[in-house]
Length: 125
Image 1 (cartoon, rainbow, N blue to C red):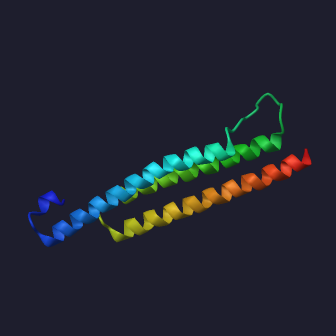
Image 2 (image 1 turned 120 degrees about the vertical axis):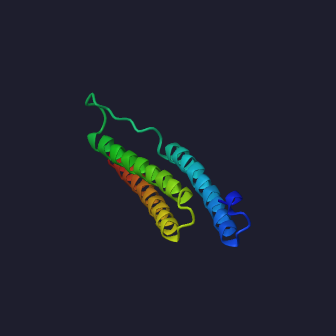
Image 3 (image 1 turned 60 degrees about the vertical axis):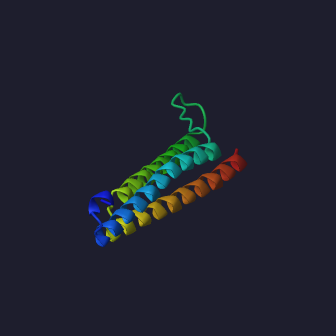
């Protein structure tokens, strides 16, 4: 868009905005990977014991927390894609930013819930 604007100030502005949004979306997509690695380091690997060993409640909760974390990362990646492809549309940009914020808040709540339930379950056993 920037190159094809042929000196048109509106085209140049729209092209610059598109480039900026693309860079921000790329940063968001890279941060999604960093978030996954951080969460995996904090939570550890989810182990599902289908043989009947281990605490069933812990297995169920770990599965739920894993699904929440995976969902949050998928939403962050998708929102980053929407942000990149918004072409400067303020409605799409706002929706993508809100989705990213909600996904991050959900991820933080899930991590807090995991920490609390882990603490409580360790105290019970």
